[in-house]
Length: 201
Image 1 (cartoon, helix red, strand yellow):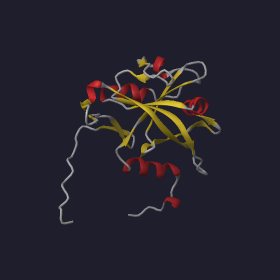
Image 2: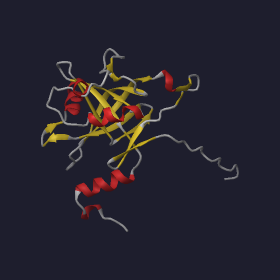
Image 3: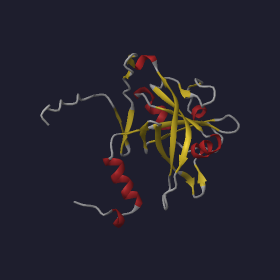
Image 4: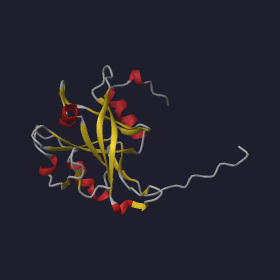
């Protein structure tokens, strides 16, 4: 069948996209407000855009009309965030941290998620994360009619758990991170070797 997106509701477009553009990586974003409270929340409309400059994009919604989620508000104010990737043993913590809490209440504290300061000028990482990206706000996009705000983020530095480094000289990292498929989760547990392209092609 062919579905005309103009003919269906926004929620149905979301269902189709979130079930078919898969698996999607999860940006588990830590930010800090002006009082130093750590906000922690996952977002799955997230992907790398460029390696030169090193750029990623994540879409963040609103709590209510004209009231941005704490993550979005904090990034707008500080211009900084930390994007944690989620290991399989962190799935429950990551999922729990998606619960909407009152402004200023930390998901890390509410769900006893241990955090660790790595880069002085950036929010802390989640203890045990496979890798984390320390990012600054590069550009905010506006899409007419959208309930989410795409943020283009520049990677300034990256933390890598030593246990996930397979070859330091060749920058090879093994990250079996949790991803999203529709409303479910998936773990990147298998890799498929790329077939060789014939020389005569």
